[in-house]
Length: 190
Image (cartoon, rainbow, N blue to C red; front, side):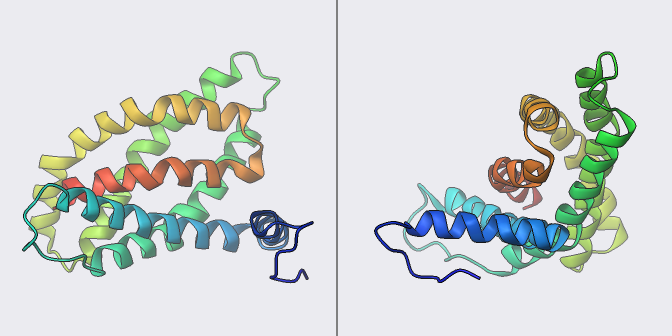
């Protein structure tokens, strides 16, 4: 293991990167899950900060129930499901198949994205303690809007991710984009 102290020869960011790469190799699913959980929670915090911007100073401060819910979703669902989906994508549509880039993108955008977004709505509603009627209303009012926005925002990023990003970094790449995506989702969940 590496020392946690940076030196003139080993800057702190290099130590963190090397440690992350080590953990990614040794514990890929756990590392991706924890990373997903942290960045999902941060996305919710970012949403709260953006929502409070421009409001008067006597508005409420940050809450932590939202980041916890988003963090749990990222930890339990985003990390593992994304890991397995990207592996499945490589297996079912290898890069040497004609039109593989478009086929991979279509599978992601038309199958995985709608199902994953529905899962998000269900899980977060359950974590919020909402009943089925409330979930149904949220799905009717927010799902289609969120899915269309997902297709607008994510398509170019997913094209790059599934075709050019090395497999071990795809979940991390998606998590970085998702930091802002979860901020958007948190804003429509309110």
